[in-house]
Length: 108
Image (cartoon, rainbow, N blue to C red; front, side, top):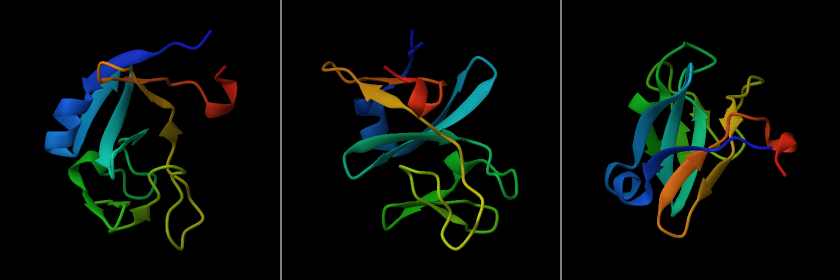
């Protein structure tokens, strides 16, 4: 059974566009991009900087370290072989954002 963790509200993300939350021992960066919530590991795979301190540009997440640009849905970095881990997200009808730390293929 999938473990979902309530971590934020849509209202807060709409206002801030990004934030960092901790689920157990995992720090997750949440982003509000074009009406969708995305969750990625907050520590960049390249320079170990916090993605939640980066920016959003043309629908991509830009790392504050060396400006790698990540696709928020897949974690793929433009022009790079490395990929940023992503997490499944769900939003309830009342606007609560939940994250699962399980791999996307494990969700049912």
